[in-house]
Length: 252
Length: 148
Image (cartoon, rainbow over all chains, first blue to last red; front, side, top):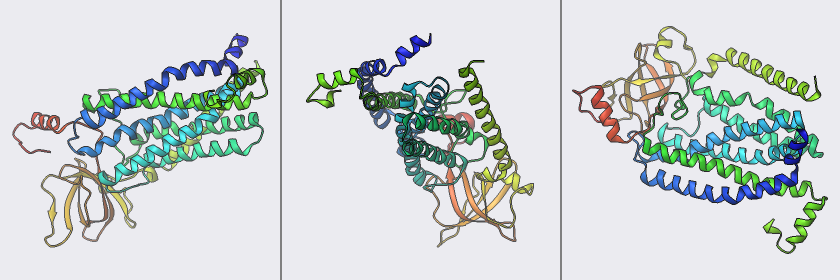
């Protein structure tokens, strides 16, 4: 069973699989995001309280969700690194961290831009905002740790440990608005009863969220392919790719 | 036990340990993590009395009183159980209105008036077009024609 896993977790097989995955994920991302933007800016009705300002939700909420989703994927990769020493997971963890940091940064910035006209302030130190800021620092810390250690396999293990330590922050972010009184409002979509958002506003939000997810996966695949080529640069299969595509290195 | 299972167990125990530690720390800082106090908590004397704190609640309908020729405004905050009167001299956020949840930062003066230095609006997690909000409002109290 482990032979089978190792074969499919091998960098060469992953490289090929990832190219096929990208071929249809990238166009899907473009379609979903275009539909989401048009739906969100054009078809969604204005909000009864916030007017058109609420439309920043179509960037803010998907980025915030992705900041948590990317972290949970990294935690999954971290377990695979520490328990099974999976090389692909090491590369996935390394390549995911900057993406997660970007989503977190985007969530914080759009939240701030949304907060100023609605709440009356750019920033408050309430539980939701603070825990999300800690998440950004966690991502940056993981990136820094990975780059500080020269041996890539040791670096991957250290980053995996730090990732798992930070996992405790994820439920804190999610439940912060329920456990403590915060300026940030409670969950709209992810609660057990009906989402408290009008259907015509919800559909573009879901489109954007799925689009952000496929964007993350396609961006991750591109980053991982580059990283795999660097990692396996001394092997024959990489040499073959480079010779076949000689003169047009961008097509790998 | 294989080395893999052993490593998995160590990871599970470490993560559980960190979770427990974080839980204890957060429980210890419970008070400091609360962004605002409600009028009921103030009435029970749980709010700090010699330093500024945040008071959160809903602006009572018809309680907003503006001082002519200045930005001064009085209003009452409620959490449906207790009420506190607030005075604020400054620019209110756009979402400030009667029936809206807001958070005011300040301190009680000697007469029991909460003098705020900052007022932030809190909006709820509901998003809907104005027509739907109107319809809901009418269904809730049929005699009122107020647009929210």
